[in-house]
Image (cartoon, rainbow, N blue to C red):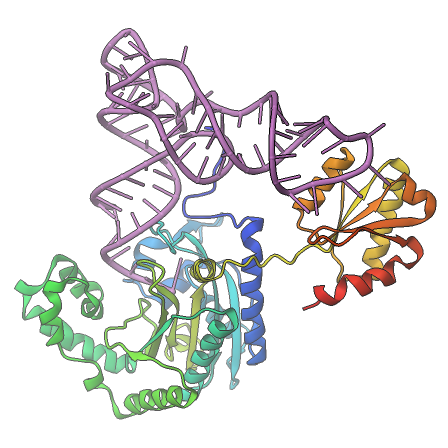
Amino acid sequence: MGKSIQAIRGMHDILPEQSALWLFLESRVMDVLNRYGYREIRTPIAEMTELFRRSIGDVTDIVEKEMYTFDDRNGESLTLRPEGTAGCVRAGIQHGLFHNQVQRLWYRGQMFRHERPQKGRYRQFFQMGAEAFGLEGPDIDLEIIAITRRFWTELGIDGLELQLNTLGTADEREAYRRQLVDYFAAHPDQLDEDSRRRLQSNPLRILDSKNPQMRELIEAAPTLMAHLGAESGAHFEQLCAGLDALGIPYRINPRLVRGLDYYARTVFEWVSDRLGAQGTVCAGGRYDGLVEQLGGRATPAVGFAMGIERLILLLEQIDDATRLAPLDAYLVTVGEAAATVGARLAEELRDALPQFSLLRHCGGGSFKSQFKRADRSGARFALILGEDELARGVIGLKPLRDDADQQEVALEGLVAHLQRVLLPTGAE
RNA sequence: GUGGACGUAGCUCCGUUGGUAGAGCCCUGGAUUGUGAUUCCAGUCGUUGUGGGUUCGAGCCCCAUCGUCCACCCCA
């Protein structure tokens, strides 16, 4: 026990009991993305370290202390991706996807950040996200948010709040940043320790401080909204009007600041109050400067990413129904002759009835123990093939989920019978 | 990186002022020589996370370490 190897801290196995829920979630999300015309892009799990330094930002926590970085055998510095957008953009530039084209892409996969594990926060975590390239108007921002809203309705998740903000263009944001630094620097005695540090690293984040003693100072701080240029202001207003028109409720949160450097203008988060401290389930925004910053031609872009583990936590809370597709039948046999015929019969049934799920008992054991396993498998029916049935060319069909009587069916007509009896209710 | 709580059977947990480990579930077999889920009977379940220390004696006390959880930071 003590010497056995365990999974790496913060990296978890998804066991079969849970994987059904994962499959449900992933397939619904993929379905929605397809219906909006988005296509999947798969990029490597590791990239050149420089890619993340240039996209996420050198002074962000992610780049400074959370990346899984290592030297390749040839001495190049590689990094396990901490998020999905950078790789997407790199691949798009490399393959010319943004050359006078609109691209609607989605991705999924494991991301890696070396943080202290916590509820809803892991060192390896799974994200699904989408990016739209080549469109600069608020209509595509609206589409992106509409997609995410549809996820929640399709998945049956409610109680999420959409928080919305705008950061202006990179220039507007930088001008505001300087003003904010001046403002806070003028009141050094009122800043707490965290805020002093943020003054250097990420001054916008001071606005989001949870320290009540900072409240007064923050309330009086200059606001970004007041410093928006006419275009950025109009962009934001049009997005809000679009959300109203679609009946998507939102709350404007002027303190909403995304952690990654590349965001500009629209930023949004979907937040739950049921996940403890890690309430953000999906977050995104516009990053018009990133493609150019990474060496492509200037291309506007907007996207989002969502944390699948956090959504799974929500689904587990609000939905106790199992997502396991029930097994249709469990085949029990007695004697070697029946086992041989049973093996062949099982394959024939799988040929003839592709939607029919059948588990054939393996490993021998008494008749009784085989039935126990049939019951525990959750199968709706037991198929029984013993010496007696074999001799008469029939098979027993016993319902396991209700009190109906066991029937005998001729082997000749079994496929037709199963089709009639099993599949109608099994089909979804 | 900082702070707090917790590590006992595969799982959920009891373990009384320190006297060399228990229950339920699960699993296996039987009562029912070819019929599950209910019932009854029997059986297997452990280097008490790991390594030290205190003690005649440690699951219990102390230290370290690893891990889990929660919060801060940060973020999906």
